[in-house]
Length: 258
Image 1 (cartoon, rainbow, N blue to C red):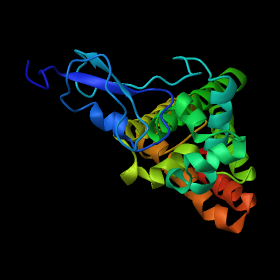
Image 2: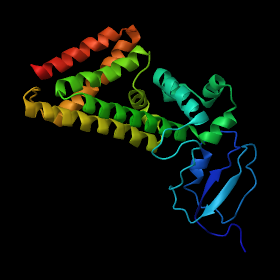
Image 3: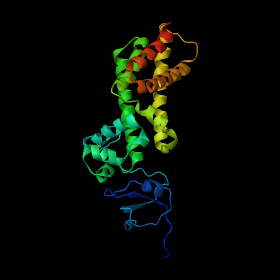
Image 4: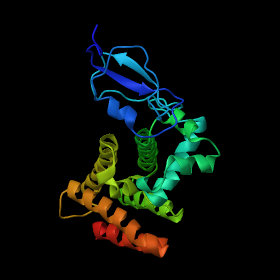
C-alpha cells in the first residue's frame, strides 16, 4: 500500500502536549492518513490520535472540566477566573498561558490539559460570561416590572464591572476582533445580539406602557444604548472615574423618559 493511504480525517493533541501553536486546529482542515497513532512531531511535543471520517473543520478539542450548559468547576474554573480578569484588564492579546500559569502556580501543560489552545480558552470565557450575563438579565426581569428600572439596572451591570477596574469582557474582545479566531468572533457578536434583543424587548414594553419614549425603532435604540455604554466605559477607564460613566448612563436613560 502506498503512503499515505487516502482518507480524510481529523487530529487532536494528547493532553500532555506542552506547546500552544494552534497546530491542532490547523490539522483539522488537512487530509491525513488513516491510522491509530503517529509519533510526536519533532520539537513540538505533540502526538496525534487520528480519527477517521470526521468532516474537515468539524473537530472541537475536548475542554476538561467544562460540560455543555454547565459552569466549569475545579481547576478549569480557576483558570477561567484568572484569564477573564486578564482579558478584562489587558485584552485577549495582552496575556499568555504563561501569565495564567504563573498566577495559579501550575505548569502550562496543566492549562493545555483543560484548554488545548488559547482559542478554546477564549470560547469558554465568552460562553461563561454570556451565560452569567444572561442570568443577570433574567434576574432583572424577575425583580423589576418598570422598564425604566430595568434599563437602570442594566447600566449598573456595566458600572459594577468598571468599579472592579475591569471592562466588559466582550467589549475588550471586540477591540481585538480582527485578530480573534472565527469561533470567538461569532461568540462576541452573539453576546451583543442577545443583549440587543433583551434591550429591544424592554424598550417595546416601555413604549407600550407609555413610560419610555424614543423616535427611532426599538432595535435602533437598543444598538445606541449598547454602543453608548461600552463607549462610556472606555472613556471613563483612563480617568479611573466610575462617576463619569454613571453620569453618561443617567443622561442617556433620561432621554428615554422625557
